[in-house]
Structures are given as structure tokens and as C-alpha cells.
Image (cartoon, rainbow, N blue to C red; front, side, top):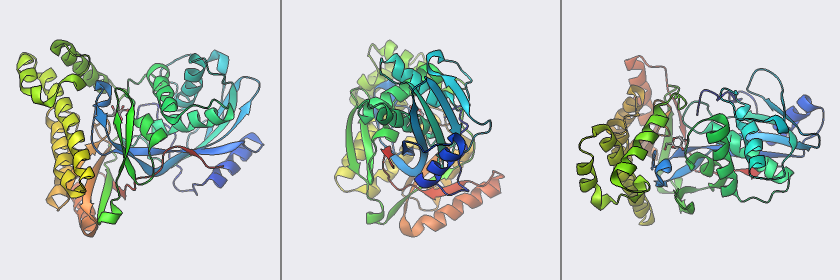
Amino acid sequence: MSAHEAVTPTAAREHSAARTEEDFRAVYAAAPAGVWAAPGRVNLIGEHTDYNDGFVMPLALPHTTLAAASARTDGVLRLHSGGADGGVVELRVDDLRPAPDGGWAAYPAGIVWAMREAGLPVGGADLHYDSVVPTGAGLSSSAALEVVTALALNDLYALGLAPQRLAQLAQRAENAFVGVPCGIMDQTAAACCTDGHALFLDTRDLTRRQVPFDLAGEGLRLLVVDTRVKHELGDGAYAERRAGCERGARALGVRALRDVPYAHLPEALEKLSGEPVVQALVRHIVTENQRVEEVIARLDAGRTRAIGPLLSAGHASLRDDFKISCAELDLAVDTANAAGAVGARMTGGGFGGSAIVLVEEADAAAVTTAVTDAFTAAGHAAPRVFTAVPSAGARRLK
Ligand code: GLA
């Protein structure tokens, strides 16, 4: 999710625990102690709410980052990626210090740093990674890399930490070591999602609920449209939105925008009438939290198709109020909806990356063709379209 993202997907090769184990042997001339996996994600609804103590609802993708790893007793951390140039990165755990521009290795190094900062007994390790999570596509390849590392170290050093705690350490690593001011959604999705469910998370108290999301069983499909426009959260636009939301909360006298009830939105907007930019940010966050609650209510009532208009309304809010969409995302969403989709929205941090499109199974091919043709007609590079099957979170494979 940032400029540092560099573990290029190794999609052209076989992606399996056996292959990752074999590659580890080739790099380190020994067998790994184990192999772990963590997935990328899409967010169904609840965008930019996580740093406002609000609600999110991601689901894990079948696409994973795998790590083969062994502990070391000499305090050396060695990192190697099948998708990155530059061979083995070698660091000493005692010397780890937060530093921007640390390249892809800053993510796993940041995990070791965050664990040690928290007083956990973590030493050196050898790690080798293989990933098929698309990078720079708003699908949280960074969180997959962080969480797979955290889970491997949790097992190698018998830390006994729960998945949510691993996600918090991963967020700490990304915030303080890599230097990206992200919220807790992506890491929690990578650590805590389960097969066949979307994950409802209250980012204030970290209450979680697995919400059944059996699209295939209902004759529906969730498409991911990767626009191939590289998003860039490290460039300040994300931090700017975050600062604007905090400013709004201060002006309204609340701890976070989560504390502005939907019913009080008109008064809140009135109070912010002198600050139109902040006002629009607040409107997005308050209505988005409401949309998450409404999506859950409709899913609980078995009305899956009825979430479509909420997804599309969420997109309009991100485009018009939060101002983080782009021409390609808007084209994907508008074309999909015009071609008969149930609903569509951009997903993730914004400024490029991916859109999600909820479609009837029978319409999936036609909607895909319509979006692809519209990109060609507009002179954009062809998007990559695939199906998001709600999948499992981080786990040990071997
Ligand atoms: C990025 C961040 C998340 C979240 C989303 C927007 O993915 O990493 O914490 O803020 O953007 O919802």
C-alpha cells in the first residue's frame, strides 16, 4: 500500500507451501521450520472509517503471501523474496530502527521491531516469501506480508499471541517503522477473516463478528476490478484525509467521528459550515458508518441483493465528499452499474487500485466485458478482473 511495496507477485510460478519450502532450501541451504500464509483483502463497505474509530467490513481474498521460516539464535534477521530483486537482506535485530524508504524488507523488519518494542522475546530468523497478492492494487499486499511474518514469529518463538494482537503489532510496525499512518482494518482482515464470511469490525473496541457471506449459494458474485492505476498512500493524501477527520472531530468536540450519530449529522454539518472540506469529510464518515450498519442489517435479514445500492452510495460518497476516487475507478463503477450490476464501489485507500462489483452470476461475463471495453474505449490500460471468494485469514500450512 505504499511506495515501499515491492514483493512482486510470483503468479507465473506454482504458488504452494511445497514450492515456498523448496525455495527456502535453495536460498538458505536448510529446511524451514514451517510455512505460513496470510491473504490480501477487499473491503465490502466501511472506507476510511477505521482511523475514525468506526466500522469496517472486509473479506479475505484467496490470494496469499506465503512465508517459509526458521528461528536463528544469533540475532540475525535474513529476508528473501521470490518477487523482489536484490537477494537476501541481512539485518541485526538489535540494530533495527524505524527508517522511511526501507524497501519491502521494512515491513517484515518492522514486525520484529514492533514485537521487541512490546517486550516480546523475539530474536533472529530466516524468512523467504512468495506472494500472489497483487501489489499497489489496493488489496493489502503489505498487510499480508506483515501478518504472515507476525504469525510465523508467533509460532517460532512460542509467543501465544491471538490473531487480533498480531494485527495490532503489524499496524504498529506499519505506522511507526515503515511510516504509513494506516488504520487497523487491513491487518485485522489478514489475521482474522474466515472462509465464507465478511468480517465486521468495530475499530474502537476491536469487537469482531464473522458475517456469513455465501455469494455463490445465492447466485451472486463479487468481482474485483484492478484498474492497474497504482495507488500511493505514502504521498500525503491519505494522511491529509486523516488529519481533516481529526480536525472535524475536534471542531465537533468528540473523541472521534464515530461519536457523531447519524441522526445528529445535520447539526454537525451546520457547525462546520465555515469549513467545507472538513464538512464533506465528516459527511462521508458519518454516512459510511451508517451504511456499514445497514449492510449488516440487510445481510442478517437475508437480503444480500439489497446491499447493492449501499455499495454504490458508498462510492458516490468517496468520490464526491472524500475525493479519493479517480477516472478509472469511476468508469469501472459506472459501467458496471449501467451493465446491470447489483452495486459497485471503489475499495481500499483510493486514488487508484481496485473496485468491487456485486453481480448476478448470470451477468458476470457481460459486466466484465462492458468494463473492459469501456477501459479500451477511454484509452486506459486493460483492467484485471477476477472473483473475490471470501477466504480464510492467516494460518500455518506446514
Ligand atoms: C488503507 C488503510 C486502511 C484503511 C483503508 C481505507 O487500506 O491501510 O487502514 O484506512 O485504506 O478504508
